[in-house]
Amino acid sequence: MGNSRKISLIDGYREVGEVELICAFEVEELSGKYIIYTKNEHDRDGNTIIYSGKIRKIENNQYIENIESGHEWEKLKSIMKLMSKYSLEGENYV
Amino acid sequence: MYSSRVRNIELPENLFSNLGEIKSKNIAQKKKLISEEKTSETKENYLKDNSAKLTNFSKHKEYRNRIDKMYENIKDITPIDNEIDNVLYFNNYQEKGIVVKPKVSSLKQFWTEYRLINNEKLSPITNKTTNIDKQLSDFDKLFDALQSRVTEINSYIDELKEIRITIDKSSDKLEKDKEKLSQEKQKFFDYKMNEESKIEKEKENLKINYDRLQTIIDDLDKKLGSINQ
Image 1 (cartoon, rainbow over the protein chains, first blue to last red):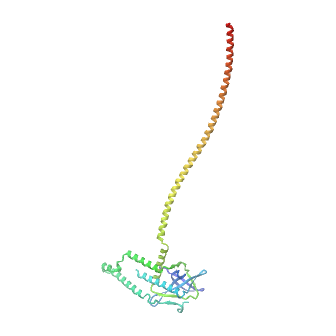
Image 2 (cartoon, rainbow over the protein chains, first blue to last red; image 1 turned 30 degrees about the vertical axis):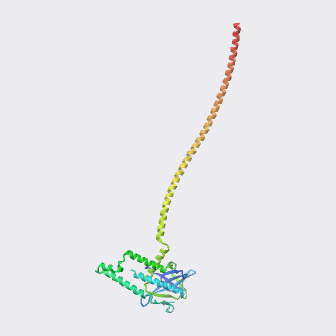
Image 3 (spheres, chains in turn yellow, red; image 1 turned 90 degrees about the vertical axis):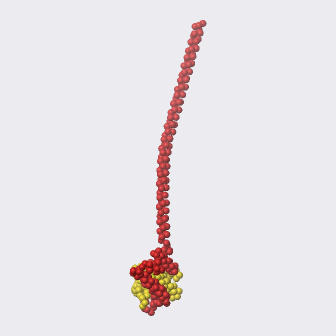
């Protein structure tokens, strides 16, 4: 739990940034693989901002792609919200 | 890529406001309990509080129930953390995100718990271990029994070999005895023939002598007869 896994994001041949991986999973309903990551950003109220991206393998490299608006995004949102809900419960369960 | 124009962050539409209220109440209650414990107030007051009546066993059960419920609500996702490379490429990627209340460490803790229970549900380790131990124990017993049986059979084979050797020896002796008997028989037969031949000769001699003697006696009788006249 203490270890953070960093992922480098590269646009073409230029490294653009580094993000912290929270989780990676496959959603059978969407037949896709996704990651949730953070850049350790917070809003004014101190809440955490998390992002979600779709993973696709092309030849030997993995690409992060846009999540389509509509059903795919709604599903990912619901997953992130459930994760948030249970994480909060875990915070309070001490 | 990271200009604010293209980032899509959705604020929670009162999704967590109610939860926040409830949870902060629980946190306040728990803080009160802890402070009460530390002060000189009696244990009796501590126990009167409903949440303080939980035993360790109940807490474990509650935790387990919570985790099980969490899993049931999210179980259609499969962890694939080990499949993600440390480098991801992108072209025209537009980040989409949301704002959440929990800390990153809490999110990661949740994910760890989810992965653990997912592994448990997919392949129950305890049963596997038990089954493997039982199979190994059964295998040991079978092997020992087989080993004993093999030893018994080997002893039996050795006995059979001994018997075979004895039979072979006896067979050789028998052949020799047979040979000897045959020789003895032949000897006896020869001896018998020989003796019979001798007896025949003796008989003939005896006859000859008897005839001669008879002739002599007849002559004597004649001579005696002529004298007496």
